[in-house]
Image (tube, rainbow, N blue to C red):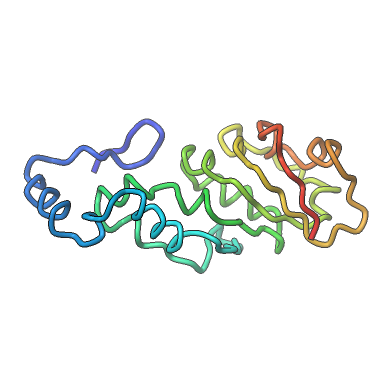
Length: 174
C-alpha cells in the first residue's frame, strides 16, 4: 500500500484488485446510492461525537468505516476530523502527543477542540512542531472559563498550536 505526499493512502487501485473494486462499486448497496445520500449517511455515522483523547494520544473510539474499501476511504478519510470535537480537557499535553501522531491532512481537517481554561492561561512550555498546528480550526471550546479573557486576546494566548489558526476562530465558553 503506497502513501500520497500528504500521508493519506494512495487510492490508485493495483491491477490485480480492479475486478474487486469494480464489483464493489456495482454490487454494494451503499456505493450504489447517490453521493449526496452517501455523504448524509457518512455524516450521521462519523459525526457529532465528542472524542476524549487520553494519555496515549488515542481515544476509546474506533472508527472502521474509512477502512472498508478504497472508495469509502476516499469519501470519508478525513471526515472524522471535520465533524467531531476532540476533547483535551483532561491534560493539554495530550494534544501535542495526539497531533504528533496525525497526518498533516488529518490536522488540517480538524474543526473543533475543547480544552480547559487553565491551559489557555498557562500554556505548555513544550515546543509544538510546525506540522502539529490546526490551521482550519473553527471552534475552540473552553471548559470552566473562570478568568478567561475574551475576544482576540484569547486566541493570542491560546498557545503555539493555534499559531496558524483560522482568523475567524470562535471561542466558546462552556
